[in-house]
Length: 65
Image (cartoon, rainbow, N blue to C red; front, side):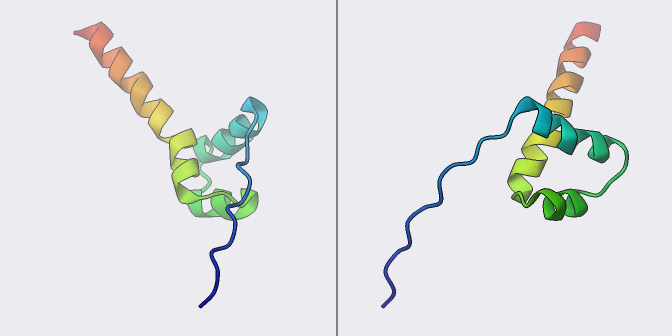
């Protein structure tokens, strides 16, 4: 039976790199292409691109109410 392999060290992403991921997404590039290009997980791509946008929308909706 194979032994459990050690977890990979946690990667950190600078705000600049996050912006480099967000800009093509907002420009129409697919998440799949971004994930392949930057070798990141789908969940990270979603967290960087979609979640902040939904938070901004929620704040704007509260302001209008």
